[in-house]
Each structure stands twice: as C-alpha cells, then as structure tokens.
Image (cartoon, rainbow over all chains, first blue to last red; front, top):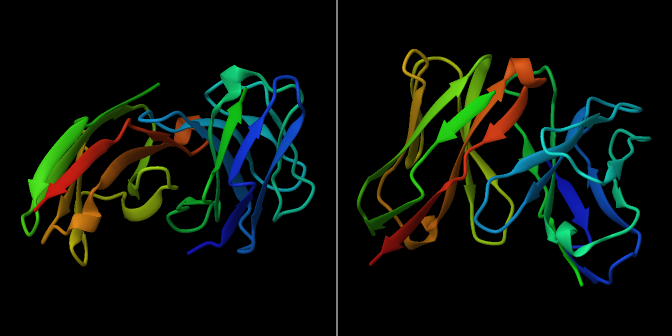
Length: 114
Length: 111
C-alpha cells in the first residue's frame, strides 16, 4: 500500500487568498492525481500527471493549477480562493502501466473559503 | 463518456450478507475497482476486477461481467465498522486510463 501524505488536513481561509495544498508520496509512483469531492457526491478528477514535468487537466474544470517538479511531490495551487472552492481535495498516486495500476489516496484536505 | 450507476443507500444487519450492485457503460473498459470510504475520510482500495468472474478477499468478494456491464461487491459477516460508502470506479482506456467514479452506495449496518 502506498504512503501518501497531504497537508494541511483542514484549512479555513478568506476570499482572495492564495493557497497551496501539498501532496507527497514515498512509493516512487509515476502517476499522481487530484480529485475534488463535495459531501455525498462522487469524486471528480481535476488534474493528473504521468511523471516529472507532466500535468494534464481532468474531466472536471478547475481554476486550480498543479506542478510536478519532483516525482514524489504534486502540489495544487489556487491563486485566489473563492467560496465556490470550498470542498474536499484528495490526492492519489499509482504505478502507472504496471499491474492493476491501483490508485491509493491520501487523507485529503478539507478546504473552507469564507 | 462514462455512466456508472449504484444504489444510493442500503441498510443491513450485523452478521448478515449484503450485495452492492454497480452497472456501467463505458467505451474503453479497462478494469473495475471498489473502494470503501468512511465519512470524512479518504477512499481505501478493496478490490479490482478486469476479467469476468469472482475475486475473493476475506469477507469481501467482487464479481464482474463485462458483457453485461455489471459488477457487485459482496460483504459477508457484516460488522458495525463496515458502515461506510462503497464506491464503484471504472478505468477507461479512452480516458487516459483514469478512473471514473460512481456516486457511491452508503451502507448502514444496524445491530
């Protein structure tokens, strides 16, 4: 099972602030993902990456951006947070192209924008 | 596109068996996953099927029929801690092999 970490776990901020959600994994997985999940709703993929210097947009449009400078690190940034960004953000990773390519999830960041 | 359907809620009794169904439509099926998600927590991996048939893992089993676009998750000897949402997710090779999730089935186990 992958070891994948997210910080902060909870964040409450005011409108207009710039925020970065951190995600790191120690399993050397190539592919990483960011999902957004509202309470009682399905997970929606907002960003993914095949490896270093690769970033792709998911099926749900998002105002956030991501970067992948190191294999283990996949941070998500919101330049100017708004109340509509309030949600749970889940990071995941997988060994792309090997076996089942199972995705393992981090604990999530619950973001509240006031 | 992808379409994944599963019941919204189910209730079962401690010690019993429950079956959670999932039907899907996708253009490039490349595997089906089941995840468990407790309220406010991250999903945890339960099972994976890519070929037809039954995969058994302890108290949990998952079945797949690709021709019918159908899967189920079977939970035996239910425990109170099994109260959670169960997410069906399909991997679609036309969608960069990413996962597409259903809305989940919220299972409540009662004494």
